[in-house]
Length: 115
Image 1: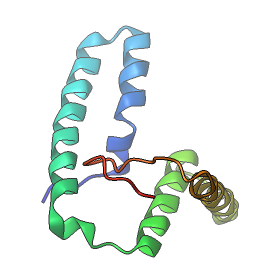
Image 2: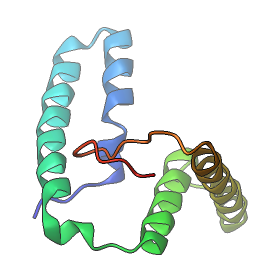
Image 3: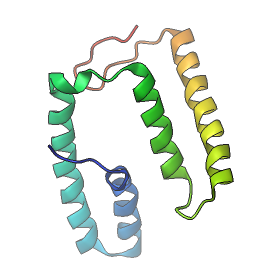
């Protein structure tokens, strides 16, 4: 199984930064890596065995990922706690807004309606 990491979530930002710095060669390498990981991610998402995660675990994983992506690596436990609250509140607020609007949210894989 392919392993996905938080580093893979940041490849687009790294590519943009490298292009801005004029390092087109390294940006191209990262772009190829991102494309490969995107293909692996799509195969992973389409696998029936990977659709069994409960909504509670998905929410916890989302909050964890957002906290990790929005804090510096050397953040102390107090900063992490505060960021956990902020991210959790943001995610729940956004979910409630989407749920309240009953929008035609689309499933990322096959376009199936969520509402």
